Image 1 (cartoon, helix red, strand yellow):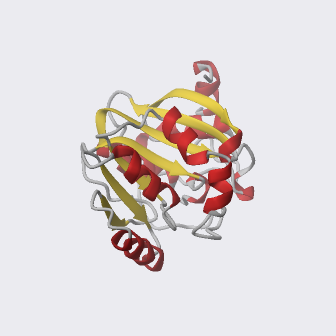
Image 2 (cartoon, helix red, strand yellow):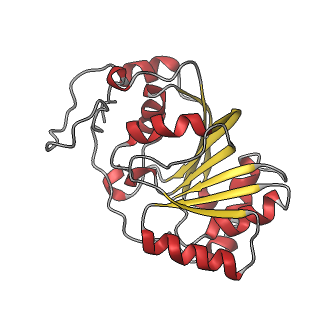
Length: 231
């Protein structure tokens, strides 16, 4: 658990260290860090990931049980979507989201082919996952957070989708964002800036890094009150 003092020091509201090009008008701050490019819909082969027991370990540590409603953000080829569908069972629901239309379409075909009646597939936007309000026990973001170009707006728009006891689960590598990871301290600060409280962080070698969980705490801040964390 990262100390509150460290979070407050990182979220000090000072001017970003990195100059950014002009962006579309809006009240949300730009991140003070590089944003990784989307290089693939698949992080690794499903066989390799299963040999590491990745999905089972992540779902177990996330507290995902039958009957839950779970969102798989940046679902890609559906590695987690398929396994989440089996985990939550017929009484549960999985919403798989991706921002690339062709990837979304391929995943929808896989879901139909495997007759996963408890799965829905949705096209999101880069800064808005477009999730229904008050719907999710867990929102999973697996090896994709570092690719979000506008993380503060994204997290702000994500917040209403959580149930009162819902959690956001992030799995990422502990390395700079331009190298397809997110340092845990930076992750915690960016979530805190949008009004999330960190619940826990655990090393997760089987998933290629660490697992961090967050819940919404207090009122959602106004967009123009959010201050970018210093990288």
